[in-house]
Image (tube, rainbow over all chains, first blue to last red; front, side):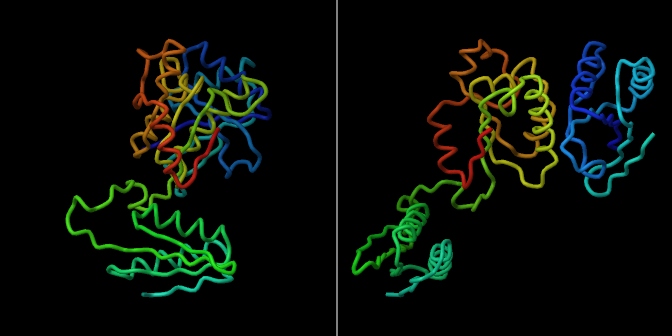
Length: 85
Length: 200
């Protein structure tokens, strides 16, 4: 039901940069803390809807977004499934 | 009269024992003996918060507090108590005094605030109220980037309040997107009645 895409980064600056790139292109992207399952460090990630997968992958290919990984989150709370793509 | 000896007990023991004892009583007087001023303050503050009348005397470094529990005869005699006190609401009040989180770079501060409010939506413990003051009102008005998170919080019973003076100052009064407008008296009341206020 609750399925979304999470983009993680190697640095806070890359996350903030990606946020403005998405904003300029009118693609929804929400700054969220990186879930503890992925990293224990205090990091920022971007959450966006699944429908933006292609657009995001394209931006990564073009070098507009410098990310670390891309995850698909499904469900909420402890039972949620996390899959790296 | 019942007597409760709380000499030598560490905080918050005297208050907890007093509460238990008073709850077990239908009506009548309870004498609580404590041996330090902090404990006396805490016990009397508790009695006051519950609407009980009390008096105390000090003798040889000991405080003798007499709390009167009266069974209200009708609604009129029932003291006006704060809802939070009756329900034992443990939820904190969060005061957001800026549109950015922390001091330093504002771009980072803005990202951190988004991250914080999003994380709050996933927290097990929700605040009872979130109060937005000064540039914090930029988060509850048009152009806010955390409005979705705030809507989630509101749907989970969090009261969202924006300072009217601040909305007016920033010319945002007509642009409020969520919650209601409040004034300083309500802000003071909310914070003073909260078990804990977190200021950001």
